[in-house]
Structure formats: C-alpha cells, structure tokens
Length: 136
Image 1 (spheres, rainbow, N blue to C red):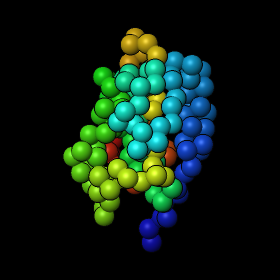
Image 2: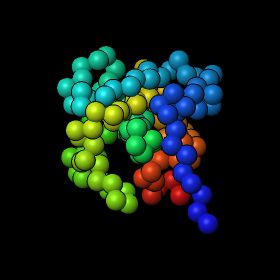
Image 3: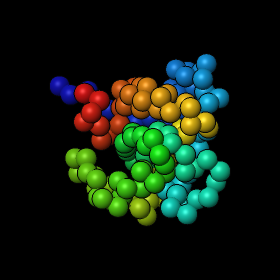
C-alpha cells in the first residue's frame, strides 16, 4: 500500500523553512513569484544564489532545486528543458496561473553553504512530486 502524498500549501513550505532555519532565516530573502511573471521579474535579489521550489494548486510542491549562481534562472531551465516527473512535463506549467516559484535566496555570497542544507531539508521534508536523484 503506497502512502498518499501530502500536498503542502506555500504557507506550509515557508513555515517548514522558518521552523528549521529560524536562527539563520534572516540570511535568506524569501520570495513568491507567479510563474508567468518569473522570466521578466526584476525584483531585487531574484537573481541570487538560492533554493527554488515549484508549486501549483493541483500538485502542491512539484520540485526542489538549488543554484549557487542564480536560482530563478536555474529554476526556469526545468520548463525550457521539459523536465519530467511521472506524467507531468514541467513545460505545461508555463501558462498555469496557479503556479509559483518560491525562492529562498541568500543575501550574502558568504552564506552559500547554507543552500546545500536547505535544499536537502526541503527535498526530504516537503515531499516534492519530482524527486531529486542526488538526495537519495
């Protein structure tokens, strides 16, 4: 019998982050960006290194990833490259009005090492639809 996957809300994802990383949460800039606006978003800090989470209302958390250079740019590559998980082709999210990118970007380059721990934590605690092969 397989376990039913819990579909977390964006608030629950952010709460998981804040509960686990409370002592250092001020080192991160947390942003919610509607996916249809993400390619042209010019908000301060959006192009920083960070951890990204794809979310939509149908699937909840779809994928977790990180970039040590530019989290928004790396996240958008999943759509460009038609990344797949099961029956979901990430390119189909392009026009989804209920899809978001949650970015957990570092404010200072010296904090890049926290990205590794945050990505591993989120991958194992928020149950993404598409799992990263490197986390195990």
